[in-house]
Image (tube, rainbow, N blue to C red; front, side):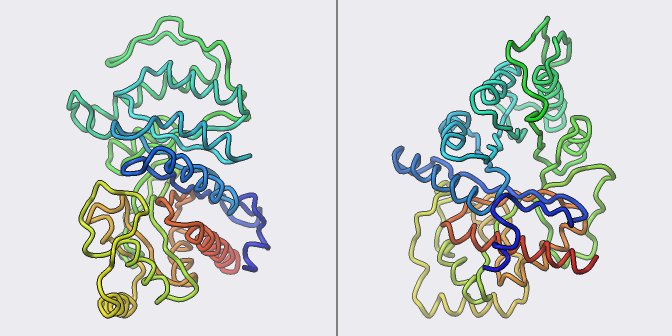
Length: 344
């Protein structure tokens, strides 16, 4: 736990880093959880995230889920500094509504919000690249409004006449944007909006990893299951994501049997022997939304260091199964910080 004491509980930023690294966790989704239990769980994850120095917490948006803005209010009321990273799908809201919600949070709580723009298939089945064109129009209006401008706009998807927020957002807590998508259209949208571009990690030993676009702030979305040694980590991984679990809609932390102790031991031995922390089974079996890194603190911090040195300055972690997951992730990022400082 020495690394936790060294860096404090106020974030992962250290002036000796050559760049700032920010880490976000993810709030649980409401699928399959009783409302009271879900509310308790959302508060717990938010408080754990703040306790271990995370910058914010991703709040998912989907027509099957409770409203992310109301969940974000619970998060803000349960913490002192944590910033909700709210997923917003332009097909479901008006840009003035989003801007007004951002301004309301700023006025009531003095808290910075992060907006995670997503372009998942919309009800009108807009083609892929056109969804990003619409997103750029939408987010540009939101940006101008939260900057205090009076907006008149005539675009392909949106039109506005003299829109203005009554309550402008203080520049010190100006909302920050992230755009989901690693396609060329997604990267262009990120650059146009001055947003961070969210993508998924390739295997750390991938020799032909594509170069990052110059000037593009890159974000990795990934899961981390780290423990003091590799075997402990893989045991925790298979207990959370057993091979016989097939209900892809149940993305909460309810556990199911992982098979016999002998089966679990065999699976753990196989993964330890494979020699790589990169794991896609939860993604491929629809139990998670991103690849995972599983292993010892040293193994995963070495991988994280490579990603940071390559230019990734922001990480969005998958929903934790317990406080232990965030505690160990904090150790990983502190160790990665130390690795980079020593190599400089």
